[in-house]
Image 1: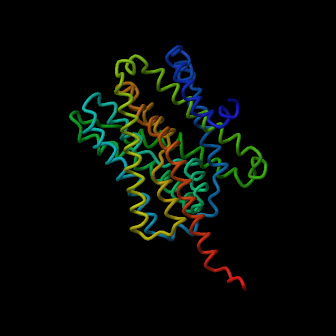
Image 2: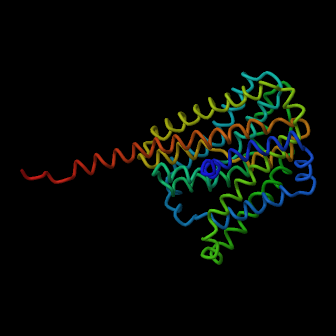
Image 3: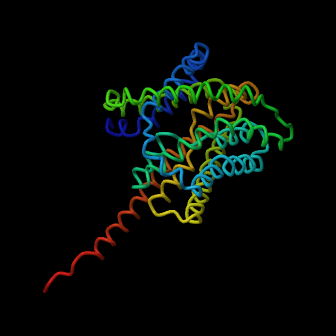
Length: 332
């Protein structure tokens, strides 16, 4: 039992914080009221800057095909597919479609996607390249894409683009940049704490779940089985995005290791940036709009582990066959 809890503590933690949100919603309110979550998110991006190894991705910037494909897939195709499919499936409440769009416009994950790529024996420099590229670009694209797509709803929504740009820059780009500037001086000192930093980032996700659920418990209860439908939709959406990105990687003729990196990492989304957007501009009118993002985060955490192992098995089989073909014949 103890070994099970150690292995799957994050998913157990999600169940625990959801229970706390319903039993004692004041805990979530306290976290938000005293800006505790704001502080830990800033620290999270600071840690990201400290731990993000960018030296190995320089060569990847020469590959215009991958650059273009990653940007278009992660920041244009994904939000368009998520928003319009959710709008067709969920007529009410609007929270679900808006929530699908919020997670759609977010950049890819930082740590998780690279970890999954490593499990898959994929191209880690390419994975880091996709991560850095989409996270930097999303600061500019998120406000404009949200404004663009939200014009297609029954009630067009206009967002303060400049305010969103400023907020994202301060909350995401600034701490990450500070971390990168400090990295050369602290690289060796922080090396032993890599696992602790990973746990800290997962704790941030748990705090986000706590805050989102505690702020909309009554509406979640009212939604009832619709919550299950949201999770099913996100599972289907993630499968669709994985297939799309695998097809794109084959179309632009990436090798096996790069295909696994592109397929996995371009399909993943960060919950932290989604929360920043939701809390700053949607939480009041659409309190349940972060639920789809939470559902997608849980889905990708489980599903991409299986996908990564599948890619790994294929890589190992391919390597074994090449080794066998090159082995000298035994004398009789």
